[in-house]
Image 1 (cartoon, rainbow, N blue to C red):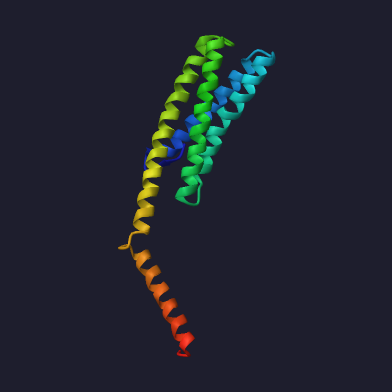
Image 2: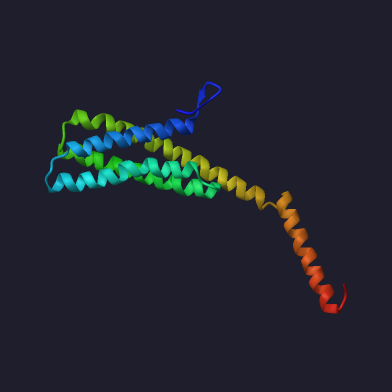
Length: 162
């Protein structure tokens, strides 16, 4: 776990929980029956249960806020799909209920955390967009000034001026 002055980073905590969940999913898939249903459900669980953490890590390494939001949305989608397949395993009693309950609870909590994080990141992205594109923002001012300068140069050049 990465720490900063004795405090654990929240992103690292989420990442560790997603890794732990992925490991537990792998163990669950290994315990599923080796019949057609077990193989199908196991394949689905293996894909979505492990990719949620991988996509979260990609989100954390995103170059831009838009990259972060996109990959976080994919991670949230995958964890929600994992919840769906865990409920299928629970209802069909492919394994003992005690083996599923904790997994389903953790996946549900992580889904709620990722969903809230996604909402926060989207709101932050909206604010960033509005601030950057506001007529009162410094970047907007310089963009307008540059456009006006370029327009004046073209006009001057068309008249034969300098």
